[in-house]
Image 1 (cartoon, helix red, strand yellow):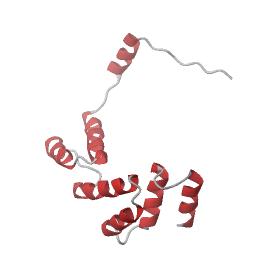
Image 2: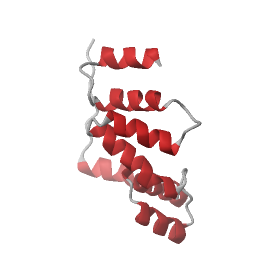
Image 3: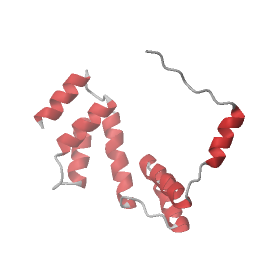
Image 4: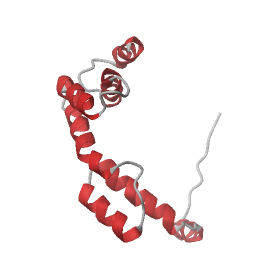
Length: 122
């Protein structure tokens, strides 16, 4: 079974790009999502004020969320669990959130089957 890829010239590609219409609201949401996801709190707040685009989460929680993410990425599981407990003592199990994050990042997990086993036990 052979598959062939369509090859576009630069001119064809640029024409296709020019034909695409992106609404300003959609672009603003994309920018806001990037700022929030990457942890740029001040920039997200200024962008919210200038564009009127509301983020999907409370901007006040971004710094705390980034601290959890950093702890997981650095392999500091206990610190991450403590931070999740502080942020959401009544929500989902922090162990579940950390295990899921570990699975996605590979932090302190020797292989994916171990990550899936951890998730199954929660």
